[in-house]
Length: 193
Image (tube, rainbow, N blue to C red; front, side):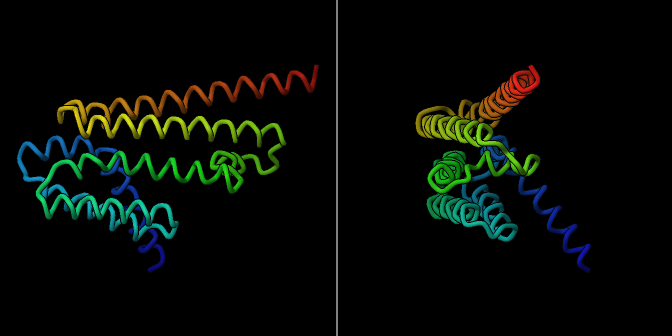
């Protein structure tokens, strides 16, 4: 029974992640055939599933925010609350990463310590700087998501939030990884040189 529960939890987590990633495309395509209130049910369903999956306060807050956006869309049959979901996600991530700068360890340090538990002080400083960069990214990306929700066409909103934002995340992640590898080589060279 425990294995079935674990399998169910993993399945729900994968489904929630897939729907979250595809959300802008699903909304864009869905609006071609459905009223916003019906698409809002998808958002509320994802919010409830995320709340069920996690006990972390920030994801519970995101789930509550998504449920409120979905409810606003259902009650008003409005598109705008649906388009604000990427803004909410960026805001929550900015809050989580920003809070970790005030209450260490930073978000990136926590991730780094999963593979390197004895992170040296230089590594702690580096992970703090990377956390600050991600905070800047989430702030700018959230503002761009807001601008596309308020002033852009549905096509531009879906393109930015469903593709361009993910490409930018990948570029930032990949660029940081390359920089980290280079720094590791420099540190190793200075220790052995």
